[in-house]
Image 1 (cartoon, rainbow, N blue to C red):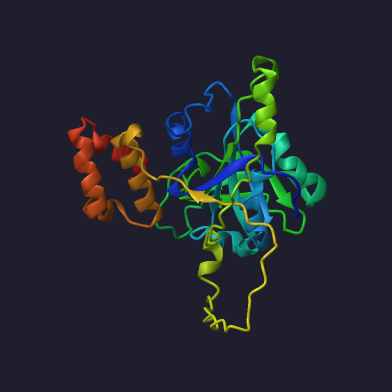
Image 2 (spheres, one colour):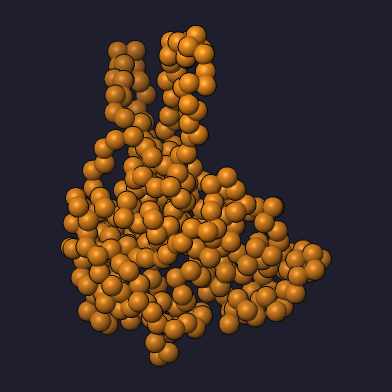
Amino acid sequence: MPYLGEALGNVSVLTNVTLKQLIEEAPVRWPTIWDETVERKNCLILLPRKSRPEMEQHGFYVEHKHPVFGLFYRPRDEANTIRSRGIDPLSASYQFLNIAVSDLDLWVNELISNNDYEKVSTIIEPLPSNAVSSIRLGFEAFEMETYAHKSLDYFGHLPLVMPPHSLVSKAFLSIPDVVPLTPSISEPEEVQEIKEQVTTTPVVEEVPSIENDEFLEEKTVQIEEEAPITSNEIPEENTSPAPKAIVEEQTSLPEVGVESEFRMIVQKLMAEGLDHQAIMENTEFQDISDRATAAGINTWELFLKLAT
């Protein structure tokens, strides 16, 4: 999936979040660019696993006017059910995308035109009742717009333990790099001439790449010791382009309040497979529960709502 051109957005990553949580916190995280009147939609991207690093950086190179949230999910409890239908659950990476409707065509155009993706439809359905699962959140089956790589088997139906907006996982956020423009006629010619003479070279720091969750369990990372450089060995200057920097977002937002933090912790513990009793005995849950109660939140009612 080769990319050309300048970066058109800033990509960052958040761990242990849900799409629902990102939507709820968006007015606080990005108050100058978030527009609640803009129509948004969820869709699914099925991509070859080897293409995930490129998809993580997709927002750097695609024009978009509103924030885009891409949450990667790896089926675990659902794996046996998917496999029983003749499809290898490890053949693909699964990205649930929340995007403004007006940005969707811009986002997928490169995928369809140059990278062998096609628009299909997938039925998102609850995991069958006879399947073994550590946690379930009931929901009605529904159809989801999907962009799938043609090398992958057609899923048709994708079983999930909970609706896509409630899945807890790692999300890559693409925030448009919006720079307000000032009309040139508003400045004297002398000022414009001075600005044209002063040029700055942006410094791009090389940031270690984000670990790919899907391969951590399957590959052993081999660490080689660097050989000492002798006086006769002068390393060649690296002339390759610096990688785009994916930064990690602040996980907790004091401005959002303890209710959102309570939701996030409960959803994270549920995703880890803890049952209701184990969650209530968890020290992290007890801490946020005490703080939320002190803030006047009905934690028991909220917990039941999240866990059932």
